[in-house]
Length: 79
Image (tube, rainbow, N blue to C red; front, side, top):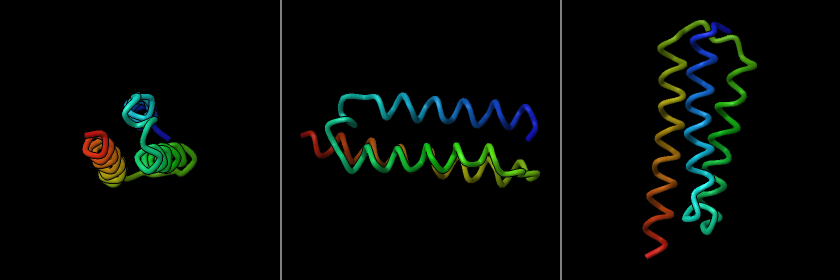
């Protein structure tokens, strides 16, 4: 995999891990599980030879959207 793709995946994974570490997420099992699944999916992409940058960005963007939704769920349930 190209170094640019590796860097992109690493940055996205780091953002997801930061979200996973938030206390509001730790207190919500469903949100925590959703974020962990997104991290796993993006991490697996490192082992797949994807030569289409647009596809890679779309998939990672979708996973970041899932993390964002999980954060919103955790925030809403904490009220």
